[in-house]
Image: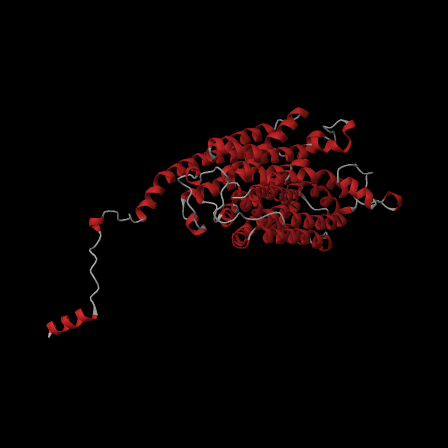
Length: 483
């Protein structure tokens, strides 16, 4: 292996981060809630359906996208995702209106969700193939950008989504750029949701395609220097196709665990900004001297920071203590956080809650792809994880929509977060079952493989005696004797 190839795998990681940061802006959906409600008079449930459609489509499209990625490589598939994501915002700016909420579902929800689904699986599969020696850590790093996307997006988006001013109060190109980079807070006016959709659509396409150009798969048979695949590979890790994987109880339990864990987190993230806004009542964490950088200390920013850090943290922890144990601890911590959230009032408690929820929710996206690779191999990881990730689509319906319905019915967040906490405890119990099934697979799979493989014959006495081939003259003699 050349040093260029070894250095090239870090280039892949950079490309993965660029792609995921853009895709991760989906987690800042809550910044769209208030502008859309004010513009069109929609209720909370109506807006949350757009978020749910995006997540469901995201998860469903990952299956064909994963299969395509396994066949033609990550670069082309991720670029397709970037184009679809940008197109969703461009079409949404034209089609969405007060009487057409379904246009938001089709554009932002389905087309945008498809774009995320095409692009999301590529960095994960590519990075894991380049880093088989650090699966949990590198998966966490490659998807950390997805968690951090909301951090870079939420603050500028909140300002730019404000209604546009007129005359001297209108934002010029330089003002838009300064706000987008987080350097300026603006002047109380924005560019409006339509212009913002156009701007974000173009930006998304450019940066996703740029990041995709850095992605690639390693050459066949490539391994990191000094890494022994036969020693490092778990006994349960056998290259498995998607059909065989779906017939295993282990895959089914991973899927259920993902549903319970992701549902609780999505229920919180979809409404985090309005929830914390109601608790803070217009106050802010950040001191005035921080200026525009104070957004990093706001609840959505804190959640985004720790969402990204949680992917790296839990990925590394799982490399040490194994995936199911890390899942169990993570879900128990998250469940306790949601149960205590109903009493949060002080600024310190809000800061801690935002950090805690983000840290644990982010861990889902490092642990489940790593576990899929551990138990079913990396050769078909794009397709296999696509199927496991459909659990996220189910959670995309249950989390935001149920949370929105509970809020509309009670005008409070207590029931939603108690329900989310219970789901986390169920997910922790499911993680124990995953651990036991993985242990059973490690014990039975090597025996099954050995039984299906014929033993080579090594004893010379067991080989059949080789008979010499008769010559043409001998054949004539034998024919004469036979008469």
